[in-house]
Image (cartoon, rainbow, N blue to C red; front, top):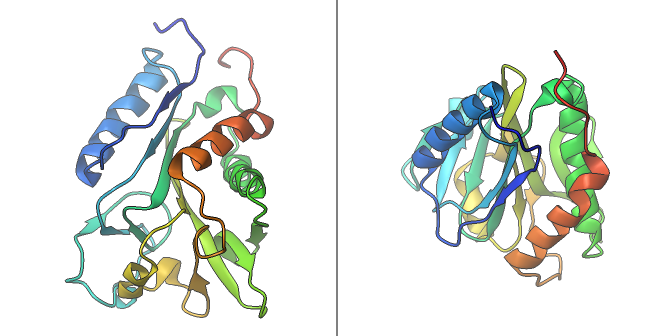
Amino acid sequence: MHNSDQMEWRAPENFVDYGAAQAEMDQRVAAIHNGSAPECIWFLEHPPLYTAGTSAKPTDLLDPNRFPVHATGRGGQYTYHGPGQRIAYVMLDLRKRGRDLGAFVHGLEDWIIAALARFDVRGERRKDRVGIWVVRDDGREDKVAAIGVRVRRWVTFHGLAINVNPELSHFEGIIPCGIAAHGVTSLHDLGQPVTMAQVDEALRETFSSVFPEMPKELP
């Protein structure tokens, strides 16, 4: 059994292949469940690709030949991942965090909002739209971060993606998360030329306020 309750934070410098990341998450989720590894937050970037969640509609894939398309078991519809986007795969044990998936997703939203606030960006949730949104000066709303999660035997995986400075035109090959009426933005597009390291620091510093230390695993 793993005796440490310490969270592992990972942030590889190189792009991570999507299929390899999924396989590694599968292994880690099993290890967290059986007590042989601690919870983990994995910061990474993928090469350009589209992912199709469990609710993806084929008509939302506008340009199927633009980038590789990966079917994935996370919730949600189509998303884009690529350079300049900070992905955080969140592997937490909900057996010691309340066994409440709704509260976990709400926590991910709060976490993104708290991190964005460090850069004077006001992220907001919407009841009818997944992800975190910003209101532009002209009143339109753009998505700055996406959320898509899975849970297996009360251990979470997949997670969130914050647009730091991706090529926004790459989102044009899909209808992101099935929402055609709104656009996509990034921190750089919002006038905040922050680095990936600064975003990671903001996420690390705000994590414990949203996901506090919990007691030993519940039976």
